[in-house]
Image (cartoon, rainbow over all chains, first blue to last red; front, side):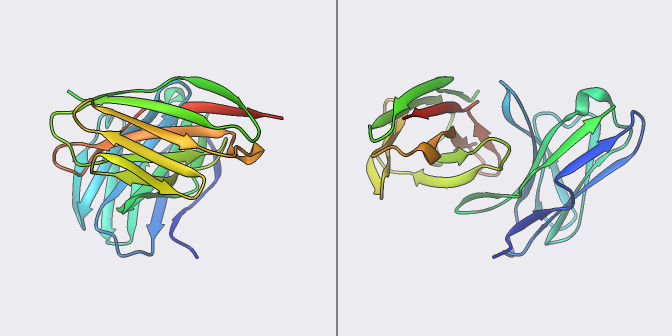
Length: 109
Length: 110
């Protein structure tokens, strides 16, 4: 019953490291999303993609980039991780409502 | 712009009924979603309303009034496992992006 998977549940990285978060969905959805979720701030959209190689900035794209080379895979990249990027990162793809992956709790030290 | 308001926290007793309200402002309307999120886990889809009225799904029901920019999630026969955050969300005018409320944390006590 696998739907949306993310490469890691927990990740610890150092400041300045390049970080890759991978997301894969098996529902043949065209739209995929990356959010971060912080206490008191709710879910905030970082980037989304509506087709292979297509991407759009969300509300907080600074410090992030994305890659969508295949329909089922949407990657989030932190070019140079900073401590303020410590957060829970959630990937989603959309059918009826958005189907979320389990999340990656990233800590940048 | 778009904005969603919902209460931060609510407490209710096992077996009771609780109503979680959500008000929203959007430039267009493409439906309203409710999600449930247990601590440390991802949100899971509960309901989608696009027309006015009440939609019932087992113990959970969701109501929408488009003219008032208002929705509520009704949980009946509360169980301890219903302790979670409940997120109200609306897609933007283009439909690609979804704006999420900050969530209402529900505590169910014995």
